[in-house]
Length: 114
Length: 117
Image (cartoon, rainbow over all chains, first blue to last red; front, side, top):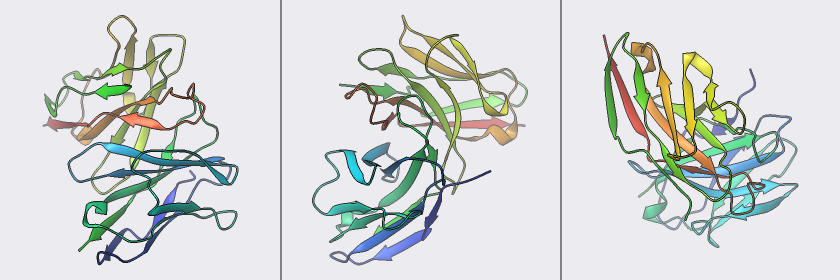
């Protein structure tokens, strides 16, 4: 069964550094998402991506964040200058369509900012 | 504002007994509702969804959920719990701000299910 994969599983970085989190969505899916989960808190939506552009973003997704689909398979989340409060589990998800279609989540990348 | 509430932080059940994990929602229009399960060090796995039609929906691993429009609830149920069902369960609703077309989910805070032998 196809899966969403994410790398790395754990990333430790210093405050102010740039990080890139990588995801490979399921191959025939068209919609891509990033969510994050701060330890002990809710899973929160960051951004959705369709047809090579951002379709929606939350208040969390400020100018420090960007997403890209550099080729036909990868989907990346970049944080330009990390802050301590960016420490969280970041989940990538994909779905075949939006609306009523379920999203399939990757295992997550745990980002620790020191 | 659209939201999902899971009133219980933890649910404890003995193996073989029925289980219920509660979820209520607040959303404009007809809701698209989902349940996900998260095992330790794993991503969220899709269990089931309600879009329209029969209020009782069946999903993976013997789970089912009942949509109740008047109570704005979507409780997750299983007739006979297994120890292996122990995990974190998340209820989610599609954000309908744009009529659901963008697809992002609004999650509850999660309920930890503990099934004891």
